[in-house]
Each structure stands twice: as C-alpha cells, then as structure tokens.
Length: 198
Length: 97
Image (cartoon, rainbow over all chains, first blue to last red; front, top):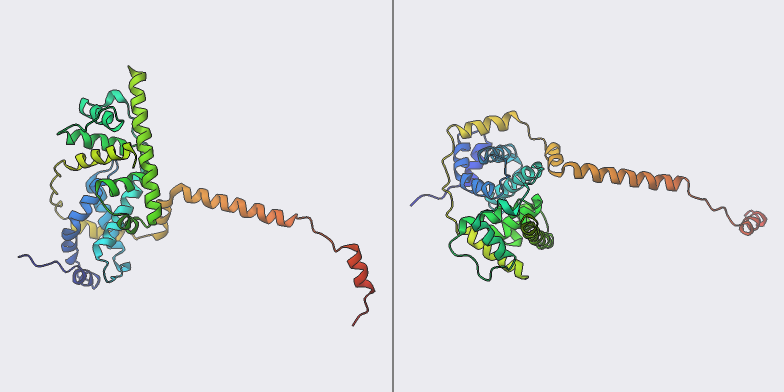
C-alpha cells in the first residue's frame, strides 16, 4: 500500500530551503490542478501554460499559506487555481460567434432537446452533448461560466464554490440562476437563427 | 426548476459521461522551470488585484471620485442659512453674564 503523502511536512521542508520538495509537491498537486484547469480553460489558452502559471503562483505565495485544522492545503490550491482560470477567462475578451448552420447533426439534436423540440434526450451522444455544453458555456461571462461549470459539470456544492471563489452562497445561487437564464436565451437565439438562415 | 434547467442538467450529465482524457505526465524539468520562474517573477499583490478586477475597478474608482467631488462641491456652495432676525435681536439684548 502506498504511504499517504504528507503535504504539511513537504511544505515545511520546502519553506526551510529544501527545493527538491518542490517536485514532490508538484507531482502530488498536478492531477488536481490539471482537472480544474481543463474544466475552466479559455479557448485560446494552452493547458500547459495555464498549469505552469498556477504552479508559479502557488510557489510565490507559499509563505502566505497558513495551515488551518479541517482545511487541507488542496483547498487553498483549488482556490488559487480557480482564481487564475477566472483571470485567464476574463483576459479572453472575444466570445465566439455561434450560428445554427455551424452545428453538427448531433449538436442540432441536443439544442432541439434543450429547447423542448425533442421529447427525449438523444441516446449515446455524449460527445455532441459535451460540444453543445461547451459552445453554450463559451457565450457566458467568465464568472457565470465558472459557476455553472463548478455547479453542474463538477457537481460541487454551493458551499464549496463559495470557498473557492470567495463569493457568498447566496451570490453563487443567484449567479447560477441568472447564468442558466442566459444559457436558455442563447439557445433560443440559436434556434431563431435556424429560421432566419433557412 | 424550469423545463430548460431540467433538460440542461440531463445534457450536462450526458456530457460528463464522456470518458476523461488521461492525465499526461509533466514535461521534463517542469518543477525546475516553475521554481526558477517563481523566483524571478516577484509576486505583486497589487498587480494581481488590478489584473483580477481589471477595468471595472478603475471605473468604480472613477465613479467614486466623481461622486465625492460633486458632494464636496455641493457642500461648498450650499446655501448657508443665517440666524433668524428675531433670534439675533434677542441675543443682542440679552445681558452679558
């Protein structure tokens, strides 16, 4: 059985000058950081570059980290990662233009399902569902996109999101509600395009 | 929950069924590169704050400046009420203690 990784000991050793511990910390945190970065990656940003940026920030601010009982180091890292991704999303000014004619057949079925034109969800089309979700999310503002991804895709609780983003729980709920309304409007606009294009 | 929200949840759940791309290994010397860059780039809290708040912070700060400036001006030119004449006459006639 593999020994549990002692994060605190590793941080202490690193802060006291043992630079070799940096590699161990990075290996330990890499899956967590990559998963978060993947889910919140701006369109034109490289995954590797953003991961590197996150780790640079982690090491720059390591001395400001204070261990608290019940709050693992990974929470602090998640928060820093989410904030870095949010900044990267904000830096991406232009949002892609979406046209109905650009959608594939599978994506069209999903958008029709979303707008209640199809009674049942299409079977075995996870890739198309993912494509339409990504497309609609790309039309949201960075904070709206972040909250929907955390809540609906990563299945995190409002409490967790509140800790990660620094927003209150009420704010998270309100933002999610508004974001879903915006998603519905975007989907509706896409369907309207269908009529104007045909 | 609206019908759209229910359907959105179904779509998201289906999207989540897609097999996850395996996590690749980190490129060689990644840790060394990160450490070197973290040492050469000093963490500037103010710059980070400005980057995260962006233009909105400047806009809000500008609005606050305009608002406080206009309040200060309004106070400066505020019509100052003099003491009522009757009160003035009474105070003049009162004997000095």
